Image 1: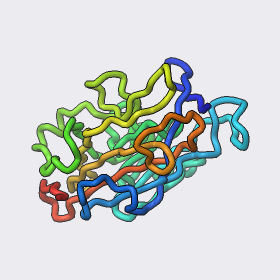
Image 2: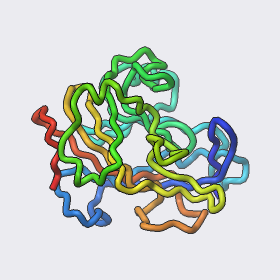
Image 3: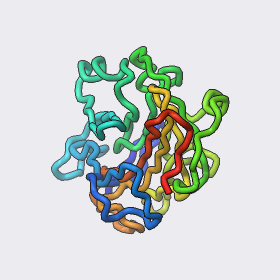
Amino acid sequence: MINFLTRWGIVAVLFLTVSCTKESAPADNDQKSTWVYDLAGDTGAAMGDNSEGKEKRGFYTFLFRFRDQRQIWLRTAADSAQWLPTADWDLAFTGPYNSEIFANDASKEYNPAKEYDGVGTAKVVMLDKAYHLVTEAPDDAVFETSEVNKIGWAGSTTSAGWFFYSLSSHIMQPIKSRTYVIKLNSGKFAKLELLNAYQGNPPVVTDLNWPAPYFTFRYYVQEDGSRNLNTN
């Protein structure tokens, strides 16, 4: 069993895996998006003392860059000082099991970019709408008034989180038909769907020993600068 430390306590949880393939893609025939499967998080860290082959410590943050799918690890203070102040990353996977995800927005409290006096200006809007149905980015005013910052454990249906967590089964369940639209530092618009956190992108997880943390997600960046996010 994997223990998940929140700011309010310790609970058990499991997470996912990722590599770039298209074999487990959802059946909406999207050929425009970038698919990421089984992207390994910090698999060497553990919350407790009894995780064989792992070290009890905090999880190293990693950054992800949309344009080239680069995963950038922040293992030292020097790594953080080099990358977090810049606009040269899009997502930060932070916290226990890398489950707490931030866009690069230095204006938001607790955002990694703000903690390092960054220049990131990315904004996020959450839509309870299936990814393939999100065909246009909202108006700028919607981004400017959005309070979405950390995307992690959803404590309620109105939370901006990307998964629910069961205190009885200790299993994480990604929220279906939830899409995040991002206004990037470049001014371009993107949409993101976080699909899973368990290795192999399984439709259902019942085994507490499922390998973790690994991440599966897809995203689309509109390179022409328009609000058109149609991937159908």
